[in-house]
Structure formats: C-alpha cells, structure tokens
Amino acid sequence: MKDNLALTKKYSELLEFYGRLLTESQRQIMSDYYLFDLSLSEISENCNISRSGALDTINKASQKLEVFEEKLNLVKSFHESKTKSRGQARAAIEELEGKIKHGI
Image (cartoon, rainbow, N blue to C red; front, top):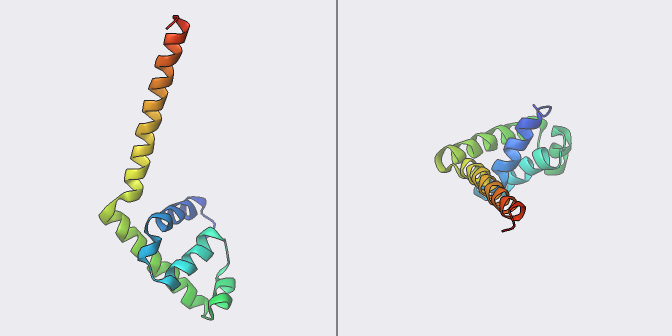
C-alpha cells in the first residue's frame, strides 16, 4: 500500500486541502502514514490501537478524502490554476524577451 509514490503524493495533497474535515484521530493517523512515513505498527503503538484498526482508519479516511475531492474539486482546480498561471508567466517572459531583443 505504501510503496506507491503517486498514492502518497495524492493523499498528501488531499490531506492538505481537506484534512480539517476529518476527525482529529483520522487526520493524525493519515498524517503519520502519508506525511511522516510511519508504519502501521508505529501508528498502532502511538495511538494505542491495533494494526488493523490503524489500517481501517486509513482506508476510511482515504475514502472520505476522495469523496470530498469528487464533490469540491479543490485539488483539481488548484492544479488547473497553477498550470494556467505558468502559461501566462511564460508568455509574459517571452514577450519581455522579445521587447528586450528589439530595443523595447
């Protein structure tokens, strides 16, 4: 479950945008797992729950985060906005370079 870097990136972003909508326990366990790279054993020890309890919390919180993104699309909108801004910045730089080459 943890070996997938893309999955870790995905849930790290979802946590950043929607983490406050989870319970404190869910947020802590998800942060420990995805942000701090703790094992299920370490999480279960820190939270005084079983390994299966930690995994169950991760699975349920992951589903919640995905539902939040499906409904609100904040992460998707953020990436689209970032891409658009980069394109605009690139165009402005190219325009400025052209003006400089031609003596403004």
